[in-house]
Length: 253
Image 1 (cartoon, rainbow, N blue to C red):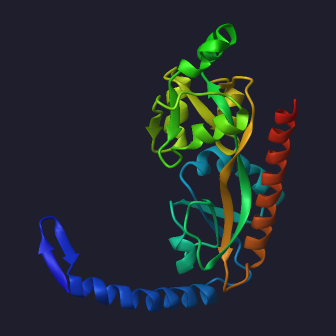
Image 2 (cartoon, rainbow, N blue to C red; image 1 turned 120 degrees about the vertical axis):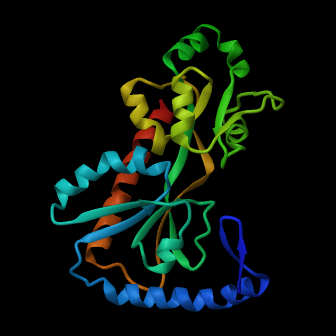
């Protein structure tokens, strides 16, 4: 079943086959245990959320939720897939629409409204030499290699296809590079707002575009949300709606 290799143990082909057969039953057992282990009176909500969205969108809002619902607690766990919800270890999740949510309930939650952002110094350059905007270095997230092409088509702004965008593993790293003057980035409404408020990044007065991808609010399909989780999910939807109204108002001006 196992083979010893430098640094540890790995499954043999027979072990991998056995694991593939046993895993569904194991996950069913974990889900069943989780469904009876969380009483309806529980006051803690466990939320799984992507690493990029947690610090920029969720964290600044949690204090407001706690003030509205002082008896409830939120345990935030960052992850890049929905495995914890499937296993019953999390009650709710917020994930990019690219994440596999098969077998779960996934509702469109946050649209990816984007517009170019940069450091104040680069913004001044663009204001003075708008014809050279297309020459600036472009930054993007590795998971969204086509984001600039989508924005360019929707905004009606010609960008040279030959210019390769510098890629980053997460939004935080990308925005830090943009704030340091290394190029222009697409500011995603759900993640860039804190940096706009501090002035580390500024918008360039260019169109706001809705990308074809979005964030889903993910919940279990086979078990209903208990009271605390339902309350938190309702509050999350309200926060998302308020953000969308603000950015849509900006795009109309």
